[in-house]
Image (cartoon, rainbow, N blue to C red; front, side, top):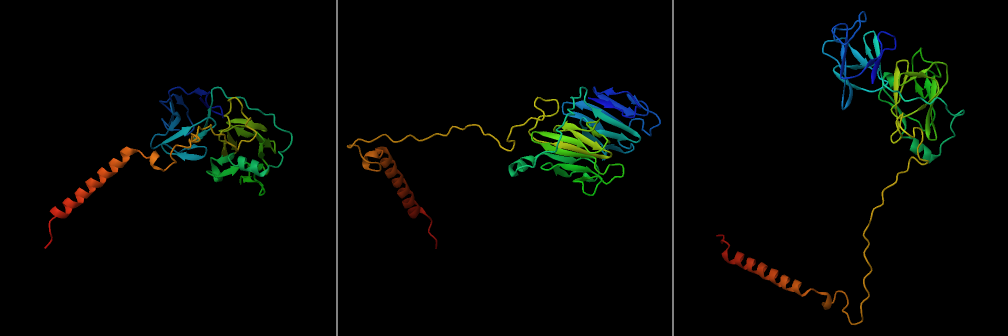
Length: 289
């Protein structure tokens, strides 16, 4: 991964080990942006990429959410440090498919709507933070009061874009000439994948679609014809055999011929021990009074 500076304050910085950022004494030094000497550090370990904010520095925001000490980052995240903006990018960003179906999707059946309920746009910032929007119907994003996902901001078009579930693909369809940032890349139309981040002005959303391949993996946008069904591995269940046919001379079940002779002696012995215990209790128990 790397740190990208969309306004050109610094060349892209590969993320290897720890990268410190500030006004002086840091690996990335930038003046005149209101940064503290050490404003933040970015470090990769086996768990992922982490943003660390020292105590006492001016506020740091990730996707418009304040971070006080620690936050985990992923590609597409926007980090704001005073007047500086930094975008986290993959080293080798998988290509974005921009060819989309010409028309809107056909209405879904009830079974398809149930399957589509697992595909959601989850708000990451702004007034939609934490809210989930299912895609069992096309969702219009924009400033219009009739928008399914309304962004109340004069900078946003009334009809900005539509997100559709097109059978086995998730589609972003532009409704204006203003691009959407997809993982930090400006696009109009695009095929989406799980984990993608969409940014429209100050609003950010992440696409969640459990079970579908991530961007760059084989089969992106291709799922089974019935994604709502699940298969279970075969389980061997023991089946009792039919009883062997009895000869006319053999005793019937439950008769004396089926009884184990040893079990009768165990029953007599247990009764004898129990009777002895009761007798001892009656004879040797202390008398009251």
